[in-house]
Image (cartoon, rainbow, N blue to C red; front, side, top):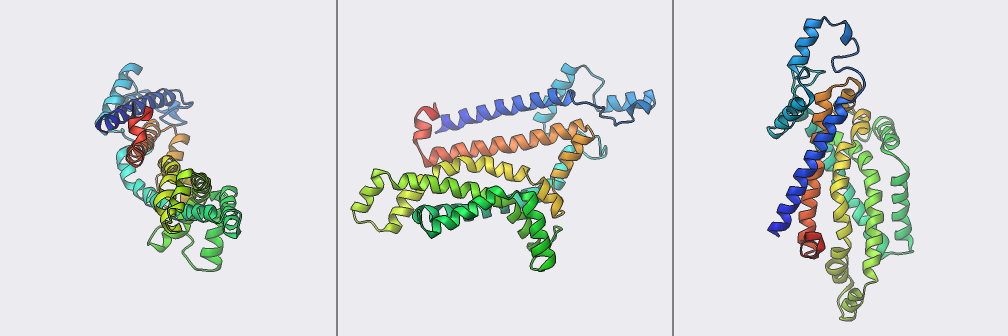
Length: 310
């Protein structure tokens, strides 16, 4: 197991280095000027001073090495839009809101999605199955940028059940979390249903039933445990996708998250912000996939002992 973990950790480091390198290359090929649209009107002395301040006056290879060295030391540079603030400071200020919203959303999605999937499989081709799959179809069909305004208007403004926006207390988290989790609920419900139906048809399930085990024991101890493995595999990427995909929902409900900084940095050619946020989000994805691999290895020893663990 130790070798399995170390190998996965090495793969994670290599992946992060490749992403950082590609980000640097793409960042340098963005159209426009990092000093702004009116950069040519800035006096040459001032322009040269700004380029030196951000290290843009150095050769590309030297900029690249400095870039990697700063990442290793946790320094993502100073933002071009907000010169008085470092990218890490902006992340520390804005990311907790995005993370909180993402964690609440993924918790709702896992609980509701897995429950619907289990019900649909156990009530196959019955009312429970049709109802669960209808909800799943709605989740796939209605994107968050449509569901968000509908929830904000009807539940928040027209009916006054919950706050329509802002980010003040626990009740303000409910509507944006539902809007963000709806699509994920559909994905998890359909995947869990398919996996459950496959497991229910396996011989060891029939053997367990023939031994006189109760339906509850068969479902909990044998069916769900094996059916949930494919779900564990995708929860990692889905978790990161939820956290990094909060931009529209944040705008609809006025959540002070990190998404707005990412979009504004692209429009303003804020090189340090673009690269910093890209690497930050990538690091989260790599970390979550790494943890998912480890969890998967514990749940199913064949992963670390077979070809998957070599």
